[in-house]
Image 1 (cartoon, rainbow, N blue to C red):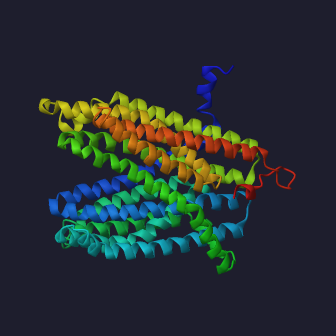
Image 2 (cartoon, rainbow, N blue to C red):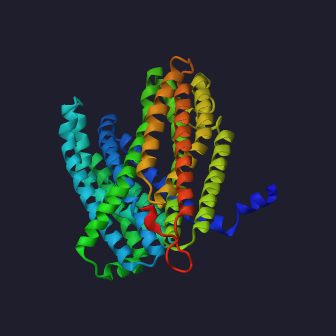
Image 3 (cartoon, helix red, strand yellow):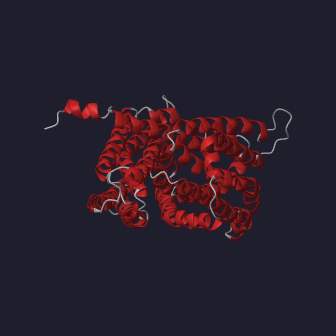
Length: 472
């Protein structure tokens, strides 16, 4: 029987600290990327309501395309780390160059969509003036997609080489550049002409280049070595197709996840402005916690991918346990923090003396408490997905996510909020049920994959290295 003290001590063991060292900088970097969007929205809102409304159309389309591309590019990590673990320099170079080609292809498609978006918005009946403003944003922001996707691959490359701190440094510099340049370009400071929404998109472009440039400087040695490898273009294109095949389900998962949580906003909007305001507060708080935990999913992919190429299956099994334990421990801390601050956070938005807003404050508190609960569930599905990505398993997990979110969570929320009479809280309970369904499905999938790992024949080498081909 393991004592409680030994369980707590395990949380601070060397393997766990190694996971925290990788996951926490990635989580903080994710928060800074989210903060960029918040800063853009706040600073554009200071211009006027019409500018903010038009820019929001462009920003949402931009983020949708980047989120899908981000998901696809995340497949770079398991493929690269497998080659890194087995010290296959040609394989590493092929995956990196193939990913660059893929980023270019995805970016060109995104540019086409964003340049056509203004006309599509008009066809869908959106106000012509708002569509024109979104077009002004899209024309410059479209050029940011390529450096952003390359930066995502750079994040994974840095993490694989144990340089996650450079990801955080790059994100900090990018955030500061974006905020400062917004002040210059949006409002026309330091002698520049006020550009409004175009200024925001120009700031996004420059800050994305700052992030990419910082990562390249940090990884100049690794990049130089990989580009010095002589490999054929055919091998690069083959790697690009493999990344696309593995990453497309991840992109669908990312879109399905964003849409699942966004659906709650539209469903809750029927309850009126006060309820929607309470929902927005709780949603933002929960989003911050979840975005931070995403770092553990990224760390899981890196750690599992490296072990897949180097070490024995028993060590892989132990790493899976540590990753899940580390992610749960951090999510429990975040959950406890949300519970402790659940009554104070709404007051930051509504004011501490606003007795007239007691109803939305109380509702926001209730929703934050529900959000605190499903933060743990979301953390579990994030780390499960990260581990499965590392095992190069993405298609079946995608099906579990789609079913759990859209066949269980959304209908469950509708039933609980309407016929069951739980109102807005019912929609949030639906989110919780959807996440629970996804967690159950992913747990069984991971359990099955780990059984396959433990039973697979070992590679021919004497030290019993995993034969990763069985997991492809």
